[in-house]
Image 1 (cartoon, rainbow, N blue to C red):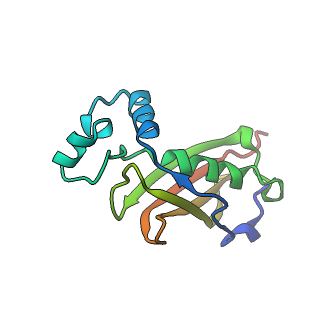
Image 2: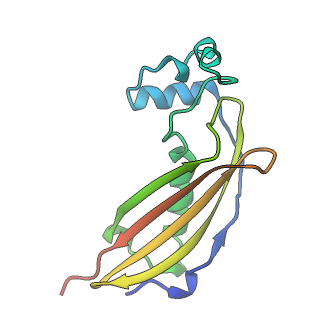
Length: 149
Protein backbone atom coordinates (compact mmCIF):
# COMPACT_ATOMS: atom_id res chain seq x y z
CA UNK A 1 0.00 0.00 0.00
CA UNK A 2 1.46 3.42 -0.91
CA UNK A 3 2.24 5.95 1.78
CA UNK A 4 -0.45 8.45 2.71
CA UNK A 5 0.47 11.56 0.67
CA UNK A 6 -1.56 13.78 3.02
CA UNK A 7 1.27 13.42 5.54
CA UNK A 8 3.42 15.75 3.41
CA UNK A 9 4.00 18.86 5.50
CA UNK A 10 3.05 17.19 8.78
CA UNK A 11 5.04 18.54 11.71
CA UNK A 12 6.20 16.68 14.79
CA UNK A 13 7.01 19.14 17.58
CA UNK A 14 9.54 18.59 20.31
CA UNK A 15 8.23 16.44 23.12
CA UNK A 16 11.26 16.45 25.43
CA UNK A 17 14.60 18.05 26.20
CA UNK A 18 17.96 16.32 25.96
CA UNK A 19 20.82 17.35 28.25
CA UNK A 20 24.22 16.77 26.63
CA UNK A 21 26.61 15.43 29.25
CA UNK A 22 30.33 14.76 29.17
CA UNK A 23 29.59 11.12 29.93
CA UNK A 24 27.18 10.71 26.99
CA UNK A 25 29.73 12.33 24.66
CA UNK A 26 32.48 10.01 25.96
CA UNK A 27 30.24 6.96 25.54
CA UNK A 28 29.41 7.98 21.96
CA UNK A 29 33.10 8.60 21.14
CA UNK A 30 33.93 5.19 22.59
CA UNK A 31 31.17 3.57 20.52
CA UNK A 32 32.53 5.05 17.28
CA UNK A 33 36.09 4.31 18.43
CA UNK A 34 37.27 7.91 18.08
CA UNK A 35 40.08 8.67 20.56
CA UNK A 36 40.08 12.45 19.97
CA UNK A 37 40.75 14.07 23.38
CA UNK A 38 38.35 16.98 22.72
CA UNK A 39 35.54 14.40 23.08
CA UNK A 40 36.73 13.40 26.56
CA UNK A 41 38.98 15.98 28.22
CA UNK A 42 37.58 19.43 29.12
CA UNK A 43 41.08 20.94 29.11
CA UNK A 44 41.85 19.59 25.63
CA UNK A 45 38.49 20.94 24.43
CA UNK A 46 39.17 24.39 25.92
CA UNK A 47 42.67 24.41 24.40
CA UNK A 48 41.00 23.80 21.03
CA UNK A 49 38.69 26.80 21.58
CA UNK A 50 35.57 25.08 22.89
CA UNK A 51 33.72 25.96 26.12
CA UNK A 52 33.55 22.29 27.19
CA UNK A 53 33.87 18.78 25.78
CA UNK A 54 32.92 18.73 22.09
CA UNK A 55 30.42 16.22 20.69
CA UNK A 56 31.42 14.26 17.57
CA UNK A 57 29.61 15.39 14.40
CA UNK A 58 27.26 12.40 14.30
CA UNK A 59 26.39 12.61 18.03
CA UNK A 60 23.01 14.17 17.23
CA UNK A 61 21.92 10.82 15.85
CA UNK A 62 21.03 10.16 19.50
CA UNK A 63 18.19 12.69 19.15
CA UNK A 64 17.46 12.28 15.44
CA UNK A 65 16.94 8.52 15.25
CA UNK A 66 14.17 8.31 17.88
CA UNK A 67 12.37 11.22 16.18
CA UNK A 68 12.54 9.47 12.79
CA UNK A 69 11.37 6.20 14.35
CA UNK A 70 8.42 7.98 15.93
CA UNK A 71 7.34 9.26 12.52
CA UNK A 72 7.79 6.06 10.52
CA UNK A 73 6.01 3.89 13.09
CA UNK A 74 2.87 6.05 13.01
CA UNK A 75 0.27 3.51 11.80
CA UNK A 76 -1.73 6.19 9.97
CA UNK A 77 1.25 6.87 7.67
CA UNK A 78 1.03 3.32 6.33
CA UNK A 79 4.77 2.65 6.18
CA UNK A 80 5.81 -1.01 6.23
CA UNK A 81 8.94 -0.79 8.39
CA UNK A 82 10.14 -4.21 7.21
CA UNK A 83 10.42 -2.82 3.65
CA UNK A 84 12.17 0.42 4.59
CA UNK A 85 15.82 1.27 3.98
CA UNK A 86 17.69 4.42 4.89
CA UNK A 87 18.54 6.18 1.63
CA UNK A 88 20.39 9.30 2.76
CA UNK A 89 21.26 11.33 5.87
CA UNK A 90 22.79 14.76 6.32
CA UNK A 91 23.62 17.22 9.12
CA UNK A 92 24.04 20.99 8.66
CA UNK A 93 25.46 22.60 11.79
CA UNK A 94 25.03 26.21 12.83
CA UNK A 95 27.41 25.61 15.72
CA UNK A 96 29.11 22.67 17.45
CA UNK A 97 27.44 20.76 20.26
CA UNK A 98 29.14 20.76 23.66
CA UNK A 99 28.62 19.21 27.08
CA UNK A 100 26.12 21.34 28.94
CA UNK A 101 23.86 22.00 25.97
CA UNK A 102 20.15 21.43 26.45
CA UNK A 103 18.61 20.48 23.12
CA UNK A 104 15.19 19.86 21.58
CA UNK A 105 14.25 18.35 18.23
CA UNK A 106 11.24 18.95 16.03
CA UNK A 107 10.67 17.34 12.63
CA UNK A 108 8.62 17.65 9.48
CA UNK A 109 7.78 15.40 6.55
CA UNK A 110 8.94 17.50 3.60
CA UNK A 111 7.87 15.23 0.76
CA UNK A 112 6.43 11.84 0.04
CA UNK A 113 6.73 10.60 -3.52
CA UNK A 114 6.50 7.38 -5.48
CA UNK A 115 9.05 6.34 -8.12
CA UNK A 116 9.50 3.02 -9.89
CA UNK A 117 7.14 1.29 -7.48
CA UNK A 118 8.94 2.56 -4.37
CA UNK A 119 7.91 5.27 -1.92
CA UNK A 120 10.38 7.96 -0.86
CA UNK A 121 9.86 9.99 2.29
CA UNK A 122 12.03 13.02 2.99
CA UNK A 123 12.27 14.25 6.57
CA UNK A 124 13.80 17.41 8.00
CA UNK A 125 14.50 17.95 11.69
CA UNK A 126 15.66 21.05 13.52
CA UNK A 127 17.64 20.80 16.73
CA UNK A 128 17.57 23.92 18.90
CA UNK A 129 19.26 24.94 22.14
CA UNK A 130 17.76 26.19 25.40
CA UNK A 131 17.52 29.71 23.91
CA UNK A 132 15.57 28.40 20.92
CA UNK A 133 18.50 29.00 18.57
CA UNK A 134 19.06 26.57 15.72
CA UNK A 135 22.03 24.27 16.34
CA UNK A 136 21.63 21.76 13.50
CA UNK A 137 19.29 20.83 10.67
CA UNK A 138 19.16 17.16 9.74
CA UNK A 139 17.71 15.62 6.61
CA UNK A 140 16.89 11.99 5.97
CA UNK A 141 15.51 10.14 2.98
CA UNK A 142 13.83 6.82 3.59
CA UNK A 143 12.90 4.41 0.83
CA UNK A 144 10.05 1.94 1.20
CA UNK A 145 10.44 -0.81 -1.33
CA UNK A 146 7.33 -1.68 -3.28
CA UNK A 147 5.62 -5.00 -2.89
CA UNK A 148 7.09 -7.76 -5.00
CA UNK A 149 4.80 -9.23 -7.63
